View 1 (tube, protein in one colour):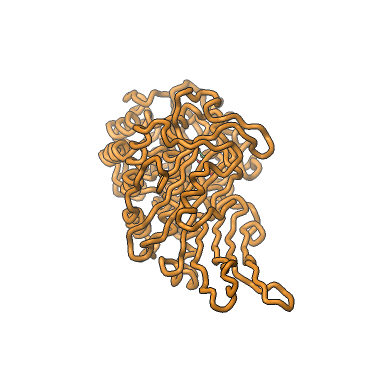
View 2: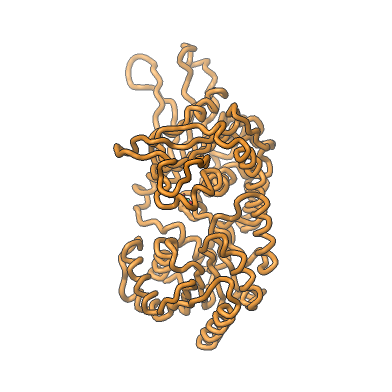
Length: 503
Ligand code: BG6
């Protein structure tokens, strides 16, 4: 959200914990490299990989270069790389070893004296959650967390998901972080917020006059949010089986889309003003009733099927999934917001793996026009207007309108007004991580989850998780891989006179 021309980034050292992990090579380093191509990194930028293995600087640099060749959105520009490369190093140490943090501190101080001015330190926690506590404690004990506190070079911490597994653990994590860092130093990642189309949501809503007057219970019949994937769990069963669709996708990405869709206009673009409104929207969500009748909550697991014409095995057959697992790979919820704007409007949200298509989309279904003029045939009701906001792929927005089909009879047909990012702006859009890392470097928290937001979302969903835990497999629906999920999720809408519109 930052206007970068107006902000300068101080000299920076970024320390990535979990530097040998997948995220570093697939996302973080390509993002840093592309920022460097765009001259958005500070002149003095240093990258330290922190990991338990013993890795020579040279070896680390070579690994990063290889990952750039595989994952950078733009080809590796040797000139840019040769400028970055000498400032890349590896620091070996365990996460719970105080001495390694002391030597990390000395390393940062050496860099600082070579630069000749305060250097901001950014600690990127890209480890499994078990690493968070020891790293945060050691950052605190070594004095690294408070480095240059209250100056533009204050140290910062970026935390990857999962941010807790329920309300209690998210609270503990927040307390642990806040013992060491002020909230303004904390950047909780939700990579969906870095997607161009997600940032654009606020612009569409609040930079256009035509939506706001109809964006409420008087004109909206329902809102649907689908975040579906064709992929299964692949090699991540170890993580996924302890997580499931609700924790992995709904608690963070989908709830963020919901908050941005339903929030009130903020009083300014200040990060806190925006996040305050998101929290208020989340606070308005009514608690869910979880029972096996699927009135508000549906969960399912995929069985074998065909995805994109290829045979796919069922979840229980995937490598690393225990036979007695009752982890859900699909969740659909019907949420209600108990506030002035949205009272009575159902919000249907769903996310799952091994579904028919990969798509993230928000659909606003407006109320049907009264059938007085054109809907004389009451058997054929007029189609409602639909606003479809496509987050990915084929990013864009379309609005369906009823139109007269050409001819001597008055026949109506829905037609689409549509805008595609690709055709309008071309396709070389920055990756989500480029935006998020840049915002963290600048210190703009708008596109990061504030501690209270995370807790609010967990507060709504933890009771669901508790019920599922006690129900075991009772109420866990099955769906064939390559379909749109269990039938119970269709019924969730049918009961209320709606049907899924992303299909
Ligand atoms: C991650 C989840 O947060 O998001 C993954 O852990 C999921 O399970 C991924 O595949 C989806 O992200 P995207 O950007 O491909 O929609």
